[in-house]
Amino acid sequence: MITELDQPRHHHPPFPGSDGDTLLDPAPVAALDRAPVPAGPRAVWIAAGRSTATNELLVGAFHERGVRAERVEPTELGRLATPGDVVFGRLDVAPTLDGVEDGLWELRRVERRGIAVLNRASTLLACHDKLQTVLRLARVGIPQPATAHVDTVRVPTELGFPVVVKPRFGSWGRDIVLCATEEELTACLKALGDRAWFRRQGALVQELVPPADFDLRLVVAGGRVVGAVERVAARGEWRTNIALGGTRRPVEPCAETCALAVAAASAVEGDIVGVDLLPVPGGGWSVLEVNGAVDFTSAYSLAGQDVFEAIARVVADATPDLDASAVGLPG
Ligand SMILES: Nc1ncnc2c1ncn2[C@@H]1O[C@H](COP(=O)(O)OP(=O)(O)O)[C@@H](O)[C@H]1O
Ligand SMILES: [Mg+2]
Image: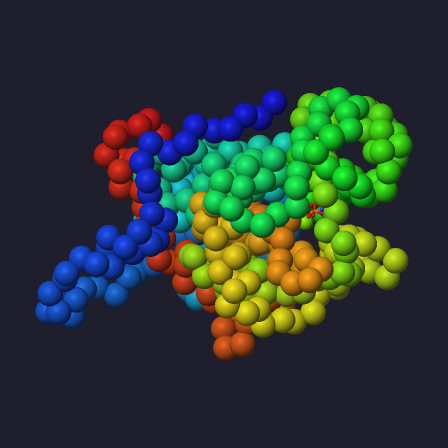
């Protein structure tokens, strides 16, 4: 059973100036003039258990900008990553839907060596464990569907019907079931008894936001929305996942929606994440999930800025965790 990793000992602003300190430092103008142009990372290690289209596109985008980049198994990080590098944590949900793919501890280890990690292990876990995401979003008052956690065949009394049943660690729209009545929910939970993920972690039972046949995915990087698409559900399908035949449609999100996505990213301390929002009948949005290993393409680019360019800049600006090296934790 994967448990919540211990929280970082210090508050580490992932970006220069993100906590205000760095930006407010009164630096003399002459000193600024002499300041070296940031060299950018020595190398970018994209830590992921699998090669995906997004990971390959990211590697290509760094190469185009003259930055050494490679997708690596997390077990290789100890050998490859050195201070001055950036580790881009892109561990995904395990295909068995019962946790995160291997490598969270390896990410923690490089983080403790003072190497910059974007989407730290704690963030990946907060995103991939949808129960933890719900709790984090609730703490800061972000609108989301009412959700209960069940680990037996139990009908949550706090929710009406219809409801959506989903794995705590899910992805690709897999094992997401709509239950219109109490009888359907009971039958669904009974049937889930043969799923290893249900026996290990139980399931989330969630209020259904009346499906509008599309949702909105915003990519947030460095505290800013840098990419967006609407995902349109396949014909006859209520779920919008691309893996279930959904298609992408360009969109320019409004400032209010962007602010909501940025707040959701911040609630999981996400450096580079995808925030999925469902339109609520009558107006507004409900945050459905925050993807720690978000998939995107150049179709996500907003007017005037390539999404890969924006992410490459955020990675180039990442600063190492100097506090961690000072405490001298073993690598
Ligand atoms: N509570 C809900 N209300 C309405 N639609 C939902 C709800 N939960 C899931 N869906 C639909 O199912 C899709 C997949 O659900 P999600 O929770 O994002 O799981 P996954 O991680 O597998 O993508 C969503 O993109 C959305 O279209
Ligand atoms: Mg989803």
